[in-house]
Length: 239
Image (cartoon, rainbow, N blue to C red; front, side, top):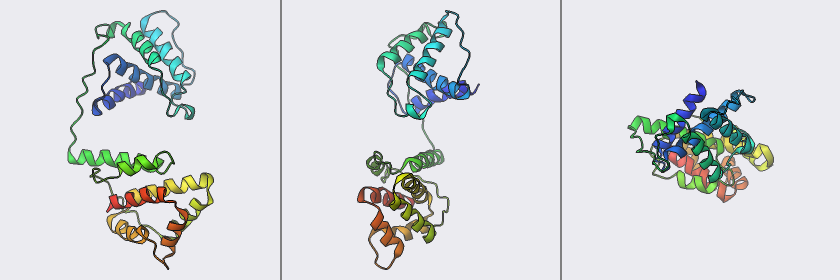
């Protein structure tokens, strides 16, 4: 049941984002998500050896999940070969329930209209995800673009900053290694969810170097420009 739900949610993602793909490719994507989750729940599932279309497609899909390590750290960012997607799509097309779909039929993905409250919740979740990944070297530039005035909604959690905590995180940033990344992630979450009053005050302290303000001095000393910029942008968004 849970794997089927994930399959349908994958279709919803395609619809929301107006993805321009064939219906069979969309089905292949949904089945890969479903099988990846299945292997997380049960790493050794029983797969029928009967030579019939559904069983054949299931075996093929699970083999692709294993081949690309989908659902595992080693598979993050994996790009699945077009030929593998096409092969799985053909296997899906052989299933009677999908036989009436034309091989070139396009997915009718017309997007989903969101109310103001739904848009706020959507962007809150997106920002939360960004907060967990924020400031990875490869993401800093993308984040700078995402945190623009176009992003209109953000949820405030009334996070109150405390100077000793900020100084501790700044020192962890200076220490390097895994602690550095953990500090960056924690700071990103704070800066993205801080309440308006605290965001304004902290932005004033960190935007320019303030002599005599230990937090300001430490921030400018330990963070290079490419990391300071997205953090300050996050604070500005929270105002």
